[in-house]
Length: 180
Ligand SMILES: Cc1cc2nc3c(=O)[nH]c(=O)nc-3n(C[C@H](O)[C@H](O)[C@H](O)COP(=O)(O)O)c2cc1C
Image 1 (cartoon, rainbow, N blue to C red):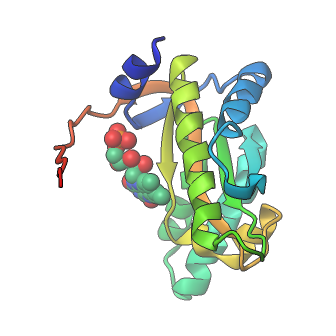
Image 2: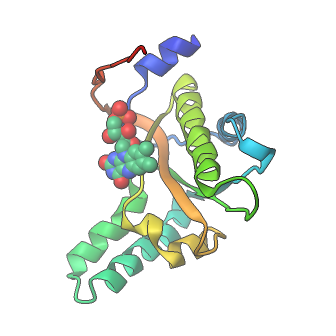
């Protein structure tokens, strides 16, 4: 797939199902992520994959996060939260491990965002679909801990990967270029 064509045709999937990216494709996707611009070559990205039954660990952590925010959550709401981890056959939590030093934190998070976009495009080029989500769980210290991150680190994306069963719409964004 031509690079510009891939960029123009990528959309977030509405629904994903098996098959997940194979191990070899997942490696290609992550490798594409690590080609992102990265000030100071800090390699701030951290990739944690939940595939198959392992997704239940993430789902439980997401439900616990809801319970701590809303202590009297209804069982069906907790189940719905838990079910989010099942939205795709493979879920990758992409974190930013923050280094204290001369590179500002925002630039470290920006590098991880660029890595995620590279991964979405790589997945698209390989024939898979993806969704980049966050939500309250992405800010929860226990979810971070499950992914080997400290409270001061960031979850930049919860990336759902699989085969598209329902594609999202391609909505052109207006562009405005100011010339001075
Ligand atoms: C940092 C970040 C967090 C996001 N979190 C969510 C989210 O929690 N839920 C959601 O529906 N979309 C979220 N999005 C937006 C979608 O990933 C997607 O880009 C958007 O719906 C537009 O669709 P498109 O990618 O097909 O253009 C997030 C995007 C970014 C960059």
